[in-house]
Structure formats: C-alpha cells, structure tokens
Image 1: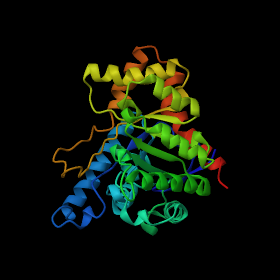
Image 2 (image 1 turned 135 degrees about the horizontal axis):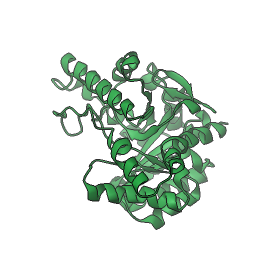
Image 3 (image 1 turned 90 degrees about the vertical axis):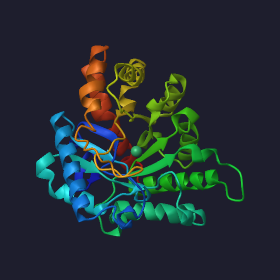
Length: 327
Ligand SMILES: [Zn+2]
C-alpha cells in the first residue's frame, strides 16, 4: 500500500477502489480560461455543477475514483478541482489529477533538457499543480499522429521522445506512475515502452492508453508482455456492435490471462471545451463502462475476479510499482 495524491490530499492506494483510468472534468487548451466570453462566472458555476452531477451519477454505479488526465496544456483548471473537492460530500469520488504534457509539446520544451522538464513535472507532484494547487498524482503523456513528424531541423518526434524520457525520470524521482494517450493504430506503445525501459523504469508503472482504438491483439499482448498496463479507456457508445467490439478486446485480454494489466475508462468529460463549449449536459458521461461494458463482460464469461482486476487491481498496481521505484 502506497500514498496516492488526490485533489483532496493523499489517500492510501487501497482506497482507490473501482477506478476509471482515463477521464477529464474539462478539456480545451492552455489559457482557455482567459479567452474573452468563454468562461465567465456563470459558466464556471455551470462547469462545477456539471462535474459534481457527473461524479455523483458515476458514484451511484459503484465507481470510487477517477483519474483526470488533463495536463495544463489540455486546459486543466485548478479552481475547478478545488470547487469539486469542496463539494466532495455531494459525490464522494476520489479524483487524481495529472501533470505532464499533451500532444503538441509546448515550444519552450524544445530547448529544455530532459532533467529540466522532469523537474517541472516533479514540482507539480511534490508542491502542487501550477505551483500552488492540489498535488498531481500521475504523469500524462500524449503520443498521437505528431509522432510521425520525424523530419526537419528539430523534428517534433525528437522533442516528444525527450519529454517521454523526462516523464520517466520524473516518475522515478517522485514515485508517480505515467499514463499515455497513444494512437493505438500506429502502435505507439512500443516506442514509448522502449524509452521507458531504456530509462530504467519499472514497466508496471506505465499505462499505455486508448489501446481499445485497435483490435490488434498481437500488438496489445506484446505491450502486456513487457509488463505495462493496457488502458482500454475509450468508450463512447452503447451501440451493441460497438460494445461487443470494445468489450471483446477486454474479454480477449482477460481470457489470455492479462486482466490484472487492463484498466477501463471512457476519455469523457462533463464540462468540456473540446472544440467549443459542450452545450449538452452530460451527467451520464462516465456510466457506460460500469453499466454497459462490465455487464457485457459478465454476460460473455468474464469472472468477478476479472472485473475486479480491471477496475481495481490494475491501476492500483501502477501506483504501487511507481512508488516502489522511487529513488
Ligand atoms: Zn483523454
């Protein structure tokens, strides 16, 4: 059992319980709170209310913890965490917030060293996000199609690799795990794991996320064999064919003996600005996994032990492996 930072302070890893491994209260971009007319006081109140409503709703379906993987450059809002934490009695869900970096590496990282970037991540874990907010509990990385940009004077890919090495160093220094958004169809978990292994990280402290955007079980199994956790953390529909495809990946990995290296989530948000303000309230945005996917898994032969492994044990193990490697 190890200590895990949440937005209300540290808890024991045994208290994480049933956890959705990749979600967001809000997303957009760095500085979105300063765009005139976008987030006035009434909209901020609406963001808090919507977040609390979605948290209360998902608590009813048995979820204890949500990992919010929104670093500053994806629009993380420290005030939103504070307000949602202040209303904990209304929802009862633990929230782990993230440091790290999203897809478009901030330009100042281009000239910084790995250790300078790692120090920034570590400060958000040890002192607080933005310096004075709640302490981050996890390090987010996002490797998507930008990883294909390998040409030019300073290829984007080379900077992404540098930030990944920085994340590994921050993980080892602080004992916080890493969770990666990946473009699964480009099999980006493989080069990421190569970097983390070269940096001497325990692969069990890493989640390779958005992995249910592919059905290539050879690729997914290869990541599991390296020891990493597989984030099957995108789930957007209750369409039966969609549920069978996404649920089928989790079931196949469980049947191959990897349930303890599979975590579940939606990559959904109740109060987002992805593109523009989401006009529709989404109190049910985090209920598809507990109320649709998990019942589908049970109906198709997954055991209660498998379900427990995917919702409780897997993500907790990443925190415990990360803490054990702390220098
Ligand atoms: Zn996400």
